[in-house]
Image 1: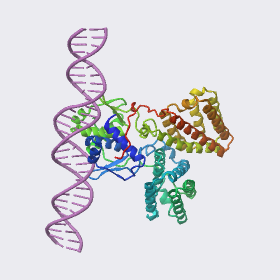
Image 2: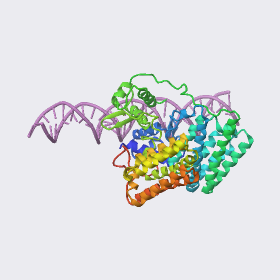
Image 3: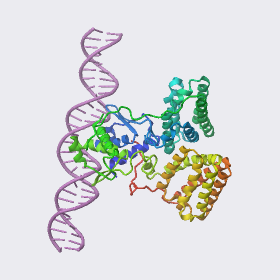
Image 4: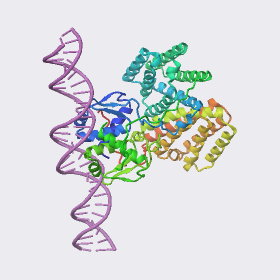
Length: 252
Length: 252
DNA sequence: ACCATTGACTGGTCAGACCACAGAGCATAA
DNA sequence: TTATGCTCTGTGGTCTGACCAGTCAATGGT
């Protein structure tokens, strides 16, 4: 197998296994080349492969970074054959939440058991960011917090599946967090749930963590059900590709 | 935007829009470089990006070819970007089983609650087929039985995710069923587990069904662990590198 | 007819150079 | 002091031309 591929696999494993966190900066091409005793061209080819796979992002003049959304960017993503299930059927959303309830619980359970010091540090950071953010627009910190926990489970499959589901949700649901949080009593409950989850995970109480996670997802699910009763429209289908640069249609 | 990316997009458009059929050979790197008036390095980077995205395959000494599987078709499927995680790392297999344990349990639970008469009929059919088949080659009936249960959960998301995971397993594991069943005592246990699961589901005992399903998956997982201890090689890559090159575990 | 050799492809790697962008730090001008 | 602008350094992006390593078919001798 080509050296560039060996290197790309090696890097991806490091990233997915949790060795490198999202937004983490990858050493420069020149450093990697020197460190691995290969030419810079090989490194660049490996990085391009990871780029194509959505594992890293590269910015001119700055460096390469672990992509926030980990593997297989478009597995279950925007153009998934599953998306059509949502067409006007909010029921599918609850099916999705049903699955998430289970998996988030498992992730929390495993995270409580397996989290390293570094994991706990990341989770704490994410949690603090969550608490410090304006509750009306904390969709991202919210996601970051849950993601940190999932990653601490050290189960790449779990990370992958949950990531796909979450992405699918965000694409589908009209700002779930923004919808739920404005209601004071809900917001308070959610904050409390997050805190319970956080404390259970970092203190290694696996069963409690699982319970907290499932309860949280279930609460969100039921809250959405209620909102729907009240007439809100939850489902929003993503639109096609935006304007995007045009690539001249031509033969090779 | 970088030239290499423009080129990769352009090529991808050509391929996806049907300009180039699967197995079609792409011009050589040197030809592309000359045709587009860029250096060969740029072409190679663009091709690596497409490679990472699963759009093309490159073979040393022969050329680059449009991949048979179009993107989007491979959610978690055969050529998933996740597949390579298995290379020589049976640990990922257990990660997968860990997730399945949870989801199969949930599916059984829901199926017990929600199965219609028709569902129960199908499950019964599948179960009978399973019992009547030669235990040494019943991978398909086995799969059919589990699938029938999952479908009875009436949760399309669950069906989809479990299907992907199962597919991934079958592609990865050297005939798990064929491996486990030959051992008489294991075979008997598995048959008993299937029967328990079956009866719990059709009689609507949700908790029992869940328990039976998770126990079953866990049993399979542990059985595999034992086999591995005894020196069996579980992981088999569908197409990948035969020799099983080792990627030294190291920091970047 | 057979088989080994050779040569002309293909992709894979290397070396070193230069350009373009981002950011930190410093120096100058207001 | 503050603000503007420059330079210096490190980053990715591209180019060149060379060589290595598989693949395959035409060639040539047996």
